[in-house]
Image (cartoon, rainbow, N blue to C red; front, side, top):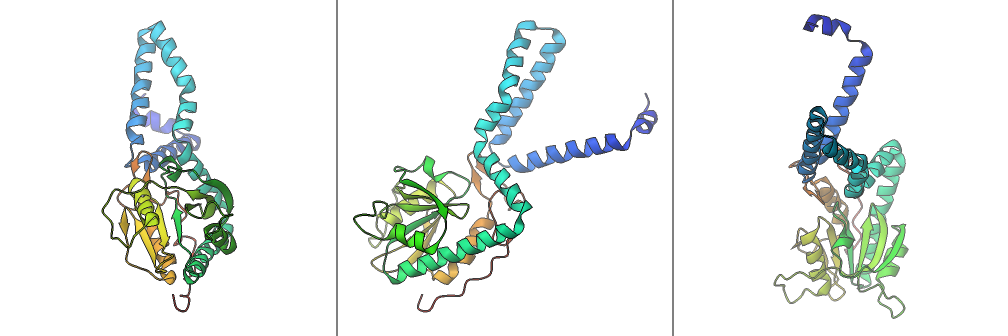
Length: 289
């Protein structure tokens, strides 16, 4: 069949089929670009080519082994990419209901800022960690307790109040997808040389952000200072009114995954909720912050 006959035999269904396959492959490449998932998928592709050659050469034993492998490769990929798949499905669900996404992000950021302001005024020390793509619990030295609650001011403050009955106040409060995931999390302490003003919370914040792409907010109970820690670097004291913009800036950066760092520029398919996309209103600065 010459190219002209081949083209004339195509129907609109063939065009649609080709377009869908192109979009699926393109989306997959966008998802894994710049990560160590690429070598893994390349290895699967090579094994598929080996399987095709084995079938062509009629190598029965090798064909049976590869057939058994490919029968379970889907389950293997789901296990390996479970975190990415979870976040991808969550992001798709949020795209389907954008209004609830906006409201949830708006409410969570306002509650976080209000809670930090209340704790700052009361001189309550706290370490709040916003989880990125890399799971904080995989590097935590103490798991704390599961909370899984909406990010409300009262809940946030109650978890940080120093009291004998509150056994989690010395650990970090972990925020994942704008929900309070856990409390009392013990982060690995950084081995950097610190200013004597900084205590265990600051060392834990630095240690956590050195090993993950999380953003840490540290409140000093002695000085009432709020500092933001990212990539193992402690900021100068910031105002509570700056929290929203700093979180938005953090979310707009390319995130690392279990397979490495994503591309050089933010991708439209990033799995984190972006405050710029959900139109969070600026938070007015509290008096005296």
